[in-house]
Image 1 (spheres, helix red, strand yellow):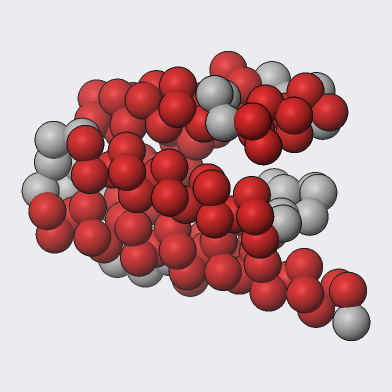
Image 2 (cartoon, rainbow, N blue to C red; image 1 turned 180 degrees about the vertical axis):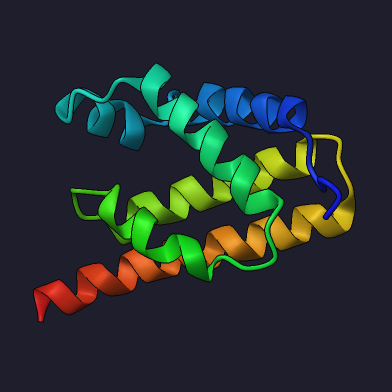
Length: 122
């Protein structure tokens, strides 16, 4: 299978995304409270998005995503995160169909995190 989104593009996407996200009050507080290493987070995100952008399905990554998020994802944070990700994806130069595919895969994974949180609260 030909690579749909290059690593260079993914790197640009991740840098732009975290530049925006780390300026959002919700994430400033969350990252500080959880003592998040943003550089480590970026590296993991680069690897994850490169794989996700260049595979046919997000299903194989659902378990891994759930395991890599030890704290609950709140709807407010998920909405800010997703809006920021969509905005950033739209800014980066790569094929429109690959952008839409990546957005849908990310949305599905984020929904699975939110559903997991709802299930654990019931």
